[in-house]
Length: 403
Ligand SMILES: *Cc1c(COP(=O)(O)O)cnc(C)c1O
Image (cartoon, rainbow, N blue to C red):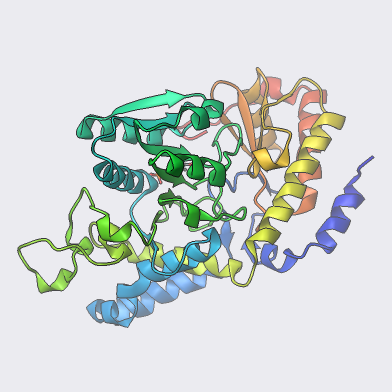
C-alpha cells in the first residue's frame, strides 16, 4: 500500500528537486495543468523586468544589436538541445498553428506529385484545421485515420505525415522513430507536433524532417509564449516558406525589393519576433540547464505510473483512458467520468487544478520539472473527498471560454 510518506520520501530523493524548487506556485494549490500552461519559474519576473527596463527602456532600438537580433535562434538552440536537434535547426517564434502551416506547406511543395496529407483523428483541432487548409491550398487531400492505423496507411501516395507526438486528450504517444522511418521508407516527409512532449521526455527529432511545438506548456514560457520550428539540415536549403516575409530574408535590413531566403533556419521566420515573450521563454528555459531529458522522462514515468496505480487502488467509477504501457503514453493522465465537469469544478475548489476536455475527460498533467511526488497523492485524495462527500453536486463549473 502506498501512503503519503512514500511520496514525501520520493520528493526528498528527487534528483530534480533543485529544478522543482525554482518554480513559483500559489500556496494551497496542487497544479496539474502544466501540460496546458506551465507555471512561472520564480526568477523570470526579475529577468523580464530587466529586459523591459534596461533593454527596452534604456537601450531602445540599440538593443537589436545587443542581443535581440540573435534571440529567436538562441532560444531555438536551447530547445533544440532538448529535442535532439543539431544547433542551427530550431528557431522560436510565431504560434504552433502558424508554424505547422508553414512547415506543412513547405513539405507539400517538396512532394508535389503526391496527393495525400496523412494525420490521425486524435490530432489537436488547430492542427486538423491547418492541415485541411494546407490541403485546400495545395490541391492535396487530408486523410484522417485512427491513431493505430497511421503506420499501415503510409504509402507512396502520401506526401506528408503530420502527427502530434502525444495526444492532448488521451495522453497516447506515437512511436516517433518508427513512424518517421516508415514515412521515409515510403518516400514521404514527416512533420511532428511536439507540443505535448517537448520538456517532458527524451525526443530524438533528428530522425524526422520537420517539427513544431508549443512554448507555454512543458517549456513554461508563459501565456502565448512563442512556438518553435525544426527543419532538418538536409531540407533547410529546399525549405520554401509559404509566407515570405522580411525576417525570412537573407538580409532583412538591406530592404531589397526582391525576396531571397536566409540560408539557415531563419528562413522559416515571417515578421519581427516577439522579443519580450522570447526573453520570458529564454529565461524560463534556464531551469532545464544541465538537466538530461532522461531524468525528466524517468520522473514523469514515475509520477504517471503512481497516479494510475492510486486511481486503480483508491477510486471507483473512473475509467482510465490513457494507455497502461509507459512507452505508449506521455506525461498526463486522462480519466473518463460522466460528471467530469462538475468533478473538476469541485477539485479546483479544493485547490487541485486540472482541466476537462469534451465530452467527459478529466486531464491531470504531471510535469516532471515542477511537480512534487506528493502532488500525486494529494490529488487522488482530493478526488476521493469530492466523490465520497458528493462535493461535485454543488460545484459550479468555471464560466468563460477556457475550462
Ligand atoms: C497546445 C497545442 C497547440 C497550440 O497552438 P497555438 O497556435 O500555440 O495556440 C497546437 N497543437 C497542439 C498539438 C497543442 O497541444
